[in-house]
Length: 259
Image 1: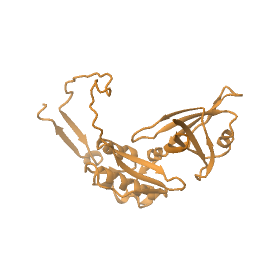
Image 2 (image 1 turned 120 degrees about the horizontal axis):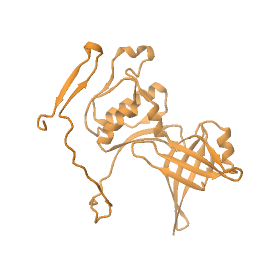
Image 3 (image 1 turned 45 degrees about the vertical axis):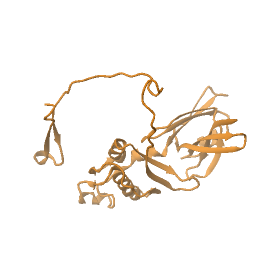
Image 4 (image 1 turned 90 degrees about the vertical axis):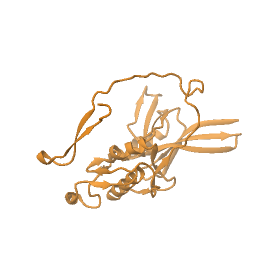
């Protein structure tokens, strides 16, 4: 016999344990190479509501718990991160909605400086921060340099050199905009997760697992489909590069076979 349920573990801004809660309802959306989210619903008279209203920077870890044969317990952390805007409705004797966004979201607010090892007045020393390795190495090097600049407690796992080699240039860009698409193209997943019981986060890249299941209607994987055949809209493109004004560089790209 097996029983499954969702457990919410609330932490203060320093990751110290506050309280465990069994939400009345949980909606979790787990995203690949993006910030996962969860929405928890609790009674408005639940003790955790007082913590949510009085403590700043409260966090939450959302766990999927499985109990087998009434004794064997296993837990899987679905996501962990900051609690967002808490709201109540149908008070009194109503419910409180608690949104949680995974720590992956921190990457969206991290800028990649062109000289991450220097202060703001030293950014003129280089036009770009340039990385020239595989997508995993570029992502980890850029994150490590800027996490160190910000003093974030992030431990970046050494790269295994996975992915396609291509140049990466960063100049006051949001790192997520620069590093995620190459990882997605290589089917690699970036993870940013706190080590339980500590104040450190591990940044790593995972490779997916291939399952040999045929993508056919008979296998049940594909339920329906649509298709469109569209003629080419262009065979030439002009790309603008670095430089300003008359010094800006341009390149012409032509698909001669299609043209």
